[in-house]
Image 1 (spheres, rainbow, N blue to C red):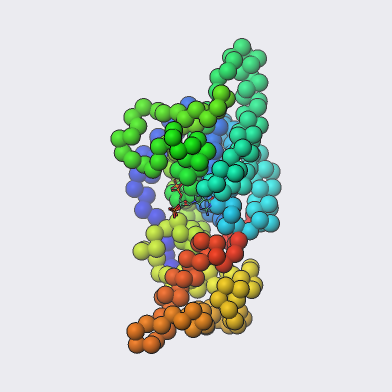
Image 2: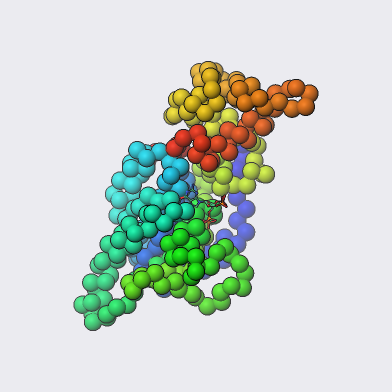
Length: 280
Ligand code: G4P
């Protein structure tokens, strides 16, 4: 399967981000905890090289906890601060503030030595589409002060959301594009739903997912869909799932596409379990 990304306003977005970078001290980068590498655009390392860096491994609730711990260690090794997060809940937000302060400690001390007092740390949220940027800004800042979505005309000048005395957040997140170095990256982005399904072959995608699950998470499919021979060919497993779930079309024939869509939906919503598709 070929995956393609339509760049659209990529260059413009990058230029905008370069400008915004000059205004901030800290880059808060959201990645998807199920594919922490494939959901990043490494350009951010260049764009934000003078800045403090915080990586939020979002959708932590859907990812495999033990693999997330490996990824967190990997990112820390690279000098980043890391927090695993479910941006929809406010639960992890206290921890985020603490880590932001930690990440900017040096800068605050530098300010103090220069006699600059009480200048808040300024931060900006970046990430690829659908990774949870708006959700994070909303639940972190509270619905009252954050603007949702990319509504044109909402902001002309820069707007800052004051989180507390010490931290301000740029209200519009920076959008990065995923980087398709190889087809595996495209496949993983498609599996988590970061690429529109309309341009994908759902049947093939589900077979790829089945292949990954029987190898890395044996028992996960059986746990969800009842008795299956997980050692069978992926297409046979898809067939068994269609049978077990009674996916039949009008002529009483097995409806593979319905079974395929079901497998993808269940995986994406976490019903198949907490699964991570790549390891550091
Ligand atoms: P973006 O600004 O980066 O493009 O992403 P956005 O916040 O719009 O979030 C994309 C989708 O991901 C939303 O679902 C959102 O609810 C979901 N999401 C964000 N953070 C998390 C998380 O930590 N865990 C889980 N499980 N989901 C998360 P949606 O289907 O587009 O909308 P809805 O179902 O919330 O209505």
